[in-house]
Image (cartoon, rainbow, N blue to C red; front, side, top):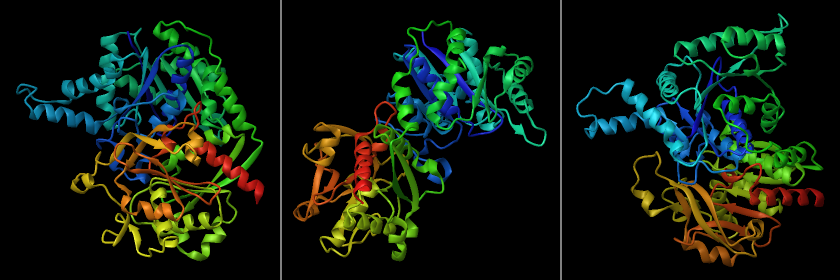
Length: 536
């Protein structure tokens, strides 16, 4: 029977529930169990697909085309296994399902209420993954205890714990232990009040995970155990770490995984060694060289908008024994041509990030031109690949009015245009080309050599495509079409013939990079940046 672990948060947001959940899942996986994690978000949006990156960070896309919370990226990077639509649920999706059932008459005329209808749907979603092959399901509840939006979820958790029993469910509560410098001491009162809020919802936490800047000590553990009604050995210290990838090691040293297994009545199937993880950390912390790569984007004020790209650089850097210093460059700042050389001249590589809309496009195109002409390693992702196509058309093919119809709808030379089926789309949510699609590679290309195989599958999130009308003239002038969707002949990867490393991809390779399986294109790009730095 599947066991369930519920992770809630208190005191403040952004404490790291996602990282703690992913770390615990990794440890339980190392114990020999099949584990998955799901995220329940209290906001009323159906999914993050229509949310501004400034609001919510990046929108993470799964193989099956779900637009999800960025925490699912952490889950995949730690567990090295894919997630799906079932791993992320929002209040909007819960209510949408219940309302659709009501309209269809499924409730036979009953008054539809939060209890039992909304809570029943939440419970159904929580146990949906449990109907598969997993031994343990970790459910992370977004927001903090005390939020109005979280109340139906807490009630559903309370009911599930009653229905499934203490040996099949446990509750982990993540809180903050602040340090008051004026008083020179750590304070437990915020955690006590947070647990009180949880108790009012009918949930007694089994384990407290305490986020802190300073070691909490035995006296703090004893005090929290006494006032929060948990065992002292179930008060877990989560001290600030230099890297999120240190957290599984820290949680293992605190025996979080051991306590969870004890509470669930499970015995470890094998010794936890984390060999690959420790090798990765050693490479990460002891690089032999460093490179500086410019990330040209338009949402740089919020690093979480490009979270998966930053993490993919961490993985690729470790694989190359190289520290990757990522410099965020706002594309709008590059629209002043005088700033181009001043801003980009010291870089070992340039990555043009994905995005939507007209703002900052010209700066991205000028950055592509700079990388192409000066032979600087270049990597374009999604919109970055499209900008590279437009730049090539304008400056190599001399088609001066070449553009994407996303930016110039009435252009006479739409090098990038909208797919025919997308022209009929009215709704914005969940209507792009989403999820994993196959791609056939030219084996002797940069991409083919990086992947080491002919066929790949990568995740997409876009509406606009390369216009195949311009395919032959592009190839004639030195552009290599090194990756193509075999089903519809859509251009997936472009490269330049006379350039050390110039690759643009229509998909999002950063979404599939993990600690144990760094993405081959990021690994090869960083390697090219190392070579460029050595040759400068």
